[in-house]
Length: 390
Image 1 (cartoon, helix red, strand yellow):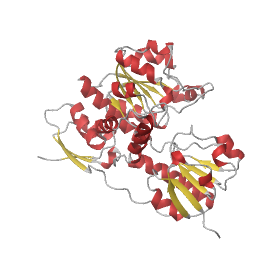
Image 2: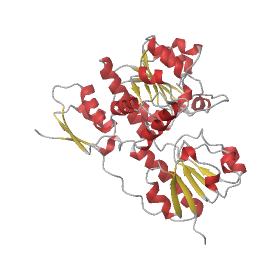
Image 3: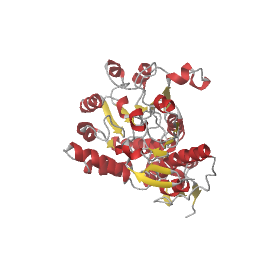
Image 4: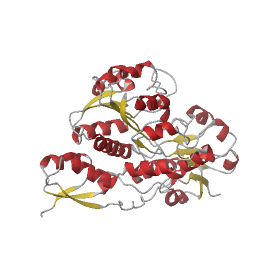
């Protein structure tokens, strides 16, 4: 039997270790993949930078496509079904990575504003894989109150969504607004342009906005205007309409600006690759074999003396050691170019060459003089915690 020909995005973590098990595998740049590149391809593995359309796949030998990311707005499912191509994605693969980034962002903005978030109200728009973890982290580790908006869940009669609010009812009540929805371009649950137009006038003045979901959910120009006018006190933006291009004004005004890397912890990318690799094994009827070992965290252990320090200060030290969103922002701003082509290329390079990051549980904490409360908060974030005598 002729070995299978496989193409996979070079940014897929563990791809070089997993896909050669299935056949002749070659790494490619998914954003610039063409129809001609697929002339002898049997299995295709990509990330969200590759638009999976009829024009790309029709007339090719591709019979399985795996998209190793959680979002699916880059996939034309109807076209692929019509072409007889099986397609699999990786829902929830990077949920914990994005939730870690949310915590890192809020703690960094809190330090910038000279406040903690105890008792503040967080509005969560989209309470699925990511939003559910964000809710738990915010309540159990940051001491926040949460209000939720997720119309599909509420309309489905999910009893856990019975107290969810409409978007416009959420806005005047929240100190922080965070988005964790898919990008829906139309229909009853349209999210494109959700934060846009007259409805945003009801947002509580001085609120903080975070977009770690999809760029087109927010009107970038409007967010920049609101920041400039002080209607928003701060913003953290990881997703941009028009990626890999992005608006320079908003990138400079936002407290934190990053190149769509919230989900780029090693586990987030590796889990996506593993999900579609295992789905391909099922499709082919082969044994997937063992999971490759994950590398150590950049900071595998950390000792923190808690004496005389607030919970927020301790959380900030632990979280920044594991997830330094300010360093990501500094790299992003340093890479800016006024030339659009160069700016786009640098955006992709930042994502491709993103520094190794692991989830919070990969960093073991040894605490001196901890209170039960700070132990509980750090444990809620997933950090393994021990008490050190000294």
